[in-house]
Length: 451
Image (cartoon, rainbow, N blue to C red; front, side, top):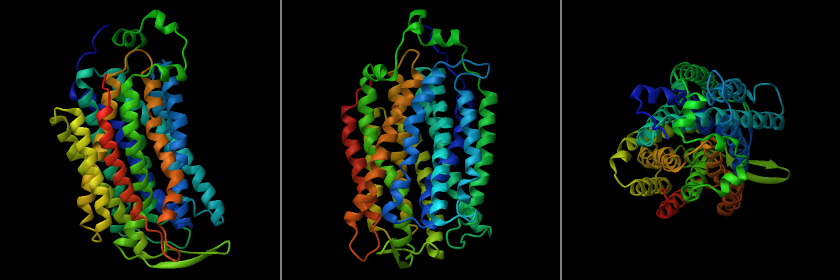
């Protein structure tokens, strides 16, 4: 088997550069979906259910894209056609989703429109995101994969930083941050427009700069014989043959991604109530009285912008920690330390009521995020050989999507347990639970089998 040659820094950079634009789209979705649906009139106890669609789309789409791209060979490459198609769909949906309340529809119709748009947005983002991980597995040797995924982590967090800050920046320059009932503020709408433009430009750059290996060269580098090409297999057989690293890292992933699903769902309500003293109102739905935050208030929308700042701080913390992780010789130790720091960050939010003091919490959360972006894929791709790299990475996405689906399905039920009658939902409790999950995940690192 031929050895993949070392690549220069800028070739590694170009392979992942489009990830910057894709992550802007993902950050805008992560930071604003709860805000958008709350503005449209969603019950806080139902917010988590709106988050089921994105990972559900991912768990279906990613393995299919991986399997198809493993068998695709075109003049444009094997992964890049899927990357480009996903980006085009994402751009279209990003221009539609934030306008869910602006087309004169009823509240229920606007929510259905928003849900359908969200499903297409996350499906297309998943379709555009996965090829970057696959190209690193395809084109980078084992020695350089740690650096390649670190570059990808850096670009991911830089894109997150931009996406999280857009609504705050637009509000700061005078674009309206409040809107009539059921309408999304212009600061959020324009953020999605700019994010869509940057996404397509970044993807065009990577598509133009990266030349994937032709079939014969790829086969030589990955030990694929003529007989193995003829081998008939399917995803279930591949799962049976999956290396131990697939399953042991997957267990850690379960607790990590469930924790971050709670963060994306409940940070907005937590910050609005605990930090910005957002007023509450009593509403009546189907004869049932409930106390909720006033989403039309300036405090709620200001809190929504501040959540973007906090997520940006998390991204900065992640960028900084990503440079430290390679200095820690023991990879498992780096993984454990990162997740424990993130768990402490989540739990500390319960005790903090100052908007600036929350920076410390989210810097610590960024440590866990940095490890989650780089270490699992480094461990897994080093354990894989042969012609099913894309399929395995697509299947591995299930360790990201399944915990999010579980967390989104059970989040509302757990929050109701925490909620006292006649009181607003204590969404901060869900963030404490997220911290506990990260610490459990750190404990599971010890069982990871790297080979």
